[in-house]
Length: 250
Image (cartoon, rainbow, N blue to C red; front, side, top):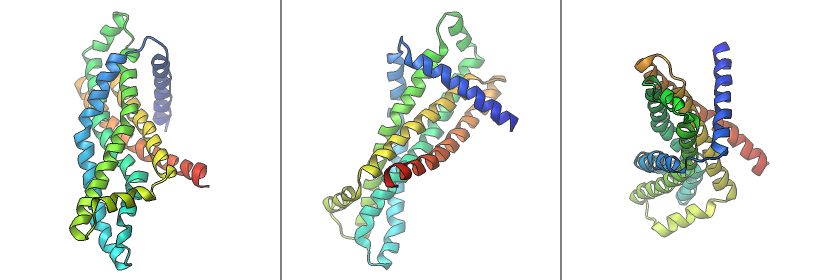
């Protein structure tokens, strides 16, 4: 319990210092764009494959269930609601936590144990401004785009699986999918991924930045970053789902 409280206090101080560096000039625009490419563009294949697989599995698992009640026509709407409101954001968050959380912790951890971060400090370069802030900003901004990409491929995968078991046109499928979606379904679900991205980026950078124990410590930091990032995605999703219900559906 004491260790958890200490960790929360340390990461709170870390976030406060990082946010100050991110808000005040000068801004590391070039480094942020480079991190956006690394975090966003290079995550597209993984996120896309996961999204398509979720759409296919969801369609295959629910087609027979809906058929029992003569409700096969509700399949596109069911897939759209399930993917956009919950599955898309959470699956994207977990995929990014696994890939980016470990990568950030390992990268910054390696720089810490090889004294590259210490060299930056000696050279009067603020590591939080140059290394941490661009990575957290890039991770936060990339998450909504990756989530939308995952949602689109999940809907496409759902259509592919549905087309094998029932006769439906592309236009009919996507018209039914889009018709059921409203503001409450789309905007809060995309907005909460900003929180996912911030948590993943912050935890990954903190674990790498504060690593101790040489190369073995780098491995531990990467593992801890993945576990905590994934856990925080799920916990924060629970909180924000309830908050969305209170604000928009109450």
